[in-house]
Image (cartoon, rainbow, N blue to C red):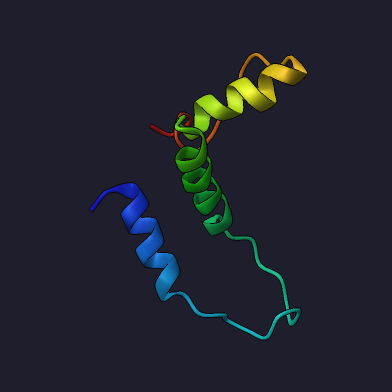
Length: 71
């Protein structure tokens, strides 16, 4: 299965670990879903989109995403 399919399958099986507001915990699942949405809507890979439309507009010359920093 591809990365997108793995992420969506995993998210579909997730359940809340506590009632909303009971406690907070950091999780990358939202960023994984964001990357999928950005790629589907724009037709660009997530890192390229961030470089062009976010980092480039503020003058950043180097960025790291989970897709370019650790691969």
